[in-house]
Image (cartoon, rainbow, N blue to C red):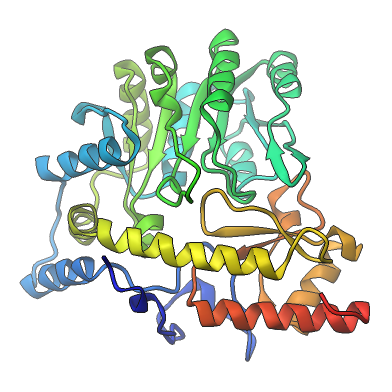
Length: 392
């Protein structure tokens, strides 16, 4: 079993180019952007050092071992059978999402998203000259659901051609059930809609839940699904830029590859390849230790901010991004920013950023040492105590 103390140290990331710490006000805890304050698996560091010591950093490419490691990983962890020829290598998930949008739609076609959702979704659609259509998630008894009646009505009314699925969902932390995924698949198949599924957080699943790739539901839905995956969230490698797309439909795969090539992109860099192989080959024990450690953070957050508190932490089924319900404070987005950043000294991501239904919420990255989360919780409690005049 991996030693949990590996995740306890605090590291000074200032001066490293880390976006998370850039322009950080003094004595502020950054808990906004989705990268972790943990070192990657030791095997990854060793692989990068070995690659660096070689001293020649020319053009590189993946090999059969790279593909086999990916196939084995998703088969072992999700029971998903992928074939080597179905994999396309890309520098990042959003790069792949953009290429997929261009491949399956035409300019001015409608693309559906379920907000609140990862905010680049709402930007990448118009940036590629498509129309954004929103079906808002519904919060019921502290858990978000898809309004399938609205979902299908929007698809029919707006003649939607593609749906961007976030699975597990960022920022609300849902892990979609097989029943929910099957209903998404049914509606999309019925209406000729392609599914572009961002499954970058699929390795962050907590006990009692299971990630099911939507492409694994049936051959019919796999034929109309583009799945975007990456080791970067799982192993904290975002700065290395490595991702993969799984596209079972051969003709669709050719179209997407053409869109990727049109950008001037060709191959992953040698450092990204070395890190990815090491992570999938030797990083699983590290990941299991990490999930247990994050589970402690989830429990601490939920205990600290129960449902009857002014700030309420919704149950986290997947991801390491907590969704805090602050609506009882009756504050505007700018007022919430001021409360958390200026008063509490915690840099969170405002729910307003994630679109429709996000007002009154804040997203909190809890992928940090337990001690850092404990301090952040106490700061928030103190700030709200002064605001409300009573204790949480």
